[in-house]
Image (cartoon, helix red, strand yellow):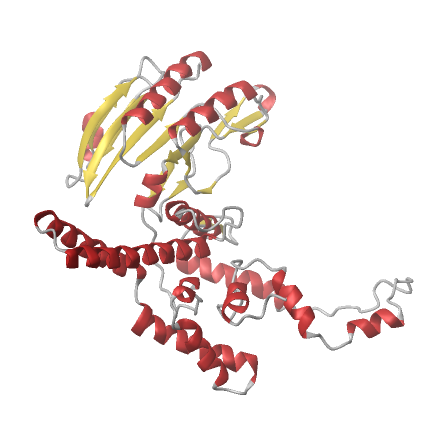
Length: 425
């Protein structure tokens, strides 16, 4: 077997041999630039430390026993690993168990087993990687051609691993000789040519004392309606971001460097000027931290967690998850095949919507015949046609969430409520 994989350019890193036709895990690598070291090995799991490309992380390959009583040993082993490691961690393989009734079709669901499995993952801080492709990963035919399908194979990771590989996702591939579908973890996206990035209002700009005056000046400089005014604010905001506000993350790193140098000097010299400078830098650093948190809070759009408790890592994580769940990694194209080619996906999407919105088939307006339909009274019609008052506009704005998806102009409701002051009583 080693010779076979060697001819394909792979070399073994960690191996747990099968017992007859049961079990067996092979950890193979083709990249000699990466250092792989076995940390733990048992009959259902092999765990390696992978170091290379400026990153170090832990990977566990799992092959859960078909016997539920034997999987207890696997769950205990994963819990022990979770207590021992601090590095980013990903676990992938055949767990031989499912988490919910939606992960099985044609077979039985055991809630007790599912509960133990879910509890293990939760205690280890592991959660699903975004998955594309098939819903189920294991297929089995039993008597009378009845088929049982389950999602036995999966990849889970910790928050730290997700932040290390923010673009990672799992692709469920087609099965051929096995009754399992292979899993492919793509740690980096296939680069896609992007056009011009649309304008997006950054709520962190509002923390700068000069921003509101810049908006007001731009707003008052034109009398050609709200659309032209917002275009002017866009231009002024981008210039403000470039020349005044700057990059939050660069500013944060610079301030951390300044603070480190000042504090090292203070260890050798008890100079009041240095102490005063450190206090100024700390105050500026806290402002930048608040701006960074607001930036990720705005991007995460999580309305059920309050901004202001230094939830930066959580908001960052939520932003990554939202982006991955919204991203289309592949599609079943018109010929029935699965494709993740960016150019093919673009063509398919354009074709799909053209078929929907560019139909030339005649439509019969009176196709329903003479059916009595409910109608509004004259008073209701008059109320609908009344001019909208400023009080109604303010009331509508007050009832809107500040950080929901922006409109086509790139501004969220927060801009109207907090910068222009359109909300409130």
